[in-house]
Length: 75
Length: 404
Ligand code: SF4
Image 1 (cartoon, chains in turn brown, blue):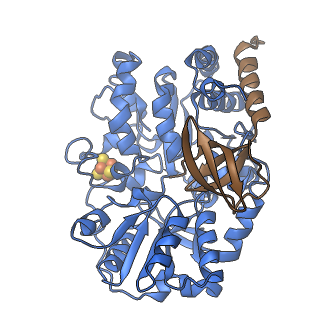
Image 2: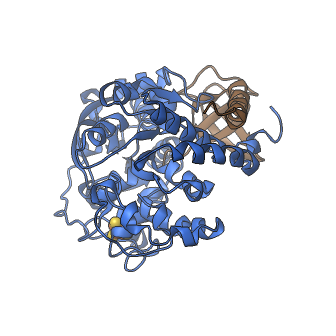
């Protein structure tokens, strides 16, 4: 039930807007997260943007993953 | 953002790179290690990722209580069903609740009998229905954890400020940290590490888990939901356990900030207050529920619309309550895959798409077969039950490895 999907904000007027992910468009309510601009990604839960999805941090996560996978074992 | 960006998070080539590391780390453990994924969405994501089939035998994943449908008590459902039988009431609900059996009926059954019960995707839809039907009482079933409760708080605030007085909420909202405290204290459950819920944490942040590390010395990793996230989180947890450290790590930092979502938290605080709350199958957990504050009581369906609720009858023999505490596996239940299937569920854990029993039923076998782990997985029964019951023998099944 805590399902959240990433969407890119493509339109916003006040608290209402539209997001898109892989071609699927969804309505977004921004009441819980004011500072989002068009072009940014958010996590959408039950019609509400609940948090920003930081693209740089997503890149960083993937980099960290690579590092962990590649790191030599000290043992 | 690169086009294939999101795909990279589910790239199996990537996850394979870490598999070896996970196996290596696991070798160092002399005893069995129990990791609990708290959140039902994680339960499903873990099954889908195939991660269970690569885990060495001494690493066990337990499903936790993070399935809202599974922990919503019968009397709540019975009340919702009783309300739906009144002609001037429209029930609005997330789809997950429709098929959950109450004491003698379900919302789905009532709907086929012609009761006005409508599935909505968002609380905004429920408000709209209230606005469009001024001569009816529109009740929204407020079920869910911290991820969901702010969206309900918002609807209540809107209803009050826009005077949509025929709207109300029947609140069964619950909080995750108090449930984790209960599990951490439980004498018959061994949890070596928690995979903490990603989307609950987008709201509450990282701090509410700190007591688990500080007071109970249990490592925690807040995780995302993609395979890359899950593999990484698992590795981080095992590394903490190996090093004897206990801290809260945030693997899902692209969406989870330390402070959470302050707007949402403020809204929860404004509309709701905490209370002792009944969790189905578990019992009352102190300060683990949210009730609507007095200032909003004209929008509290429980206070506003009195109704006669039938006597509670729990499904006999259903082990859901123990399953969601990681103490039993669905396999331990005599009804599992026999009388109880997703088509005709007996307990909520089989109804909810996030319930352990349904996840087992849907993905368990597939997981074992697809990953070619069938042979190895057989006969693990006696070792893979919830830690509380490890000594008992159980039936052989190819997916036993995947359980609690
Ligand atoms: S298999 Fe069905 S009856 Fe058994 S614990 Fe799961 S939901 Fe309950």
